[in-house]
Image (cartoon, rainbow, N blue to C red; front, top):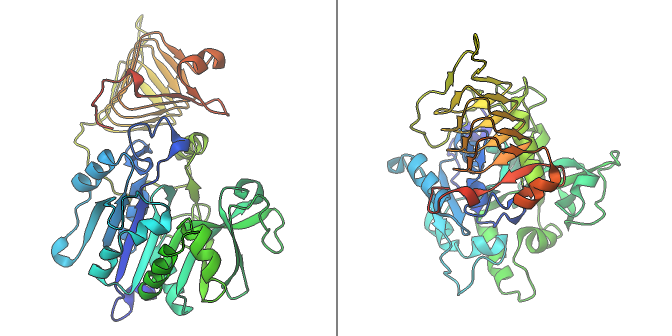
Length: 424
């Protein structure tokens, strides 16, 4: 067992998950829901991955800070994630309360500052501040152990990324041979390369571990700075590493039991439609980038009350209909009735009618794909009804007139065709 979890006097850790971002780059999928509530992998929500990372790491005191369009996210948390409060275990959604003034969260640091009462009430030894909108597996106990062994006041999780992908997108870190941070730039246009790896930069994952007293002091100080944007990357980290022991945890060394070497170290920022599409499509692979079927590190979610998936018609004789799915993920409640799904991810209660064909696509719950419809390289939002004979993904010019089309040509069919008031 990891030495952090087996140590006598298990340290008191409070997890605070940042789930209040607007998610504008995922629009229209975030038109009616918070980014962490967006479906992933046919069954899950994006936030489920960070929640499972904490639970599987033995950390059970979790506050989820929400803000924009949080209704479906809060419903997901309250109906599907129930821990044993009698034993001090909880996952509590915390809507923005404006406790310090009449302002929404001004930045990531301000979000924690506005909820300092939660930290003071729990009085933990350590506070783990993590984002809610990335797809990855991480044994957080190992990062906490690294933090303690190095006598750090703050530890930042980091991962190597190609410089071309890091430019303007991530905070870029420099470290010494002992793992201590010696440089930090927030989203630089020209990131500094990792020594000896000229095409790679070491980027922040936006996941932090702080000693509680140090965190509170720095947040109080930052709140008094009128020139501050009150953001961990822009304002807190850029200052504290110069004077205090801030260490960098190399996420690529984080080994998950039951995962292959190529799966360990996988971390995807699904902040854009193209990145979101690519991450979902990787699940179809024989050996996917992230393993949903590892019993040693289960991915839990809200239990859906759905019947088994059903495939109707065999295509014999004159009736050439055949209900089938190939290289696809098909969730419970789906009925593929004489249609075909190729290399696609189908969420629960999707109906594919006779002679319809959907390929290389992501389909959200309760979608109805009409008879003879053809869909290719698309994302279909929840509850959308595709009329019979519709063709999507074949004519970019026509698609752009009706739908959102990404730079790589992915067509996003939003909820405009869905009745108002439906669950998101």
